[in-house]
Image 1 (spheres, rainbow, N blue to C red):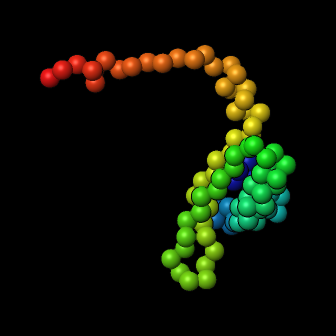
Image 2 (tube, rainbow, N blue to C red; image 1 turned 90 degrees about the vertical axis):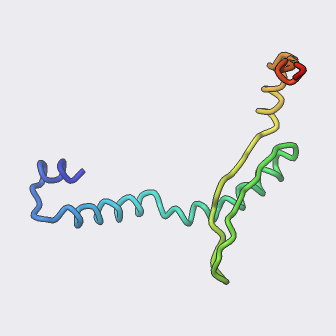
Amino acid sequence: MSKILLRKFNPDKKHSTIWRAKVKILRSIKGKHEKGFNLLARCTEMIKSSNSESICYIKWHDPVKKGARPVFLRMFMSYNAWKEGFLGGCRKFIYVDETHLKGV
């Protein structure tokens, strides 16, 4: 991005100044990540209330410091329609691995 700015506008600024400007612009457009992660709990509750058979879990890392907020680790989401479509399209298949059946 700095190369494009240098070619187009030829500013007399350091790379770090241009980088900070880029970060500031992107935050103003997209918002902060913390704000989005804070909405995840509400999102999972809305999914569970509107689609009762759907599964939605969030795993949080408990903070070490007292009074600090938990940190997002992972999220699992499965709508009931996805699950039913997957199971409806699968064939029943049973496979037994023969290596465990051999004698010593």
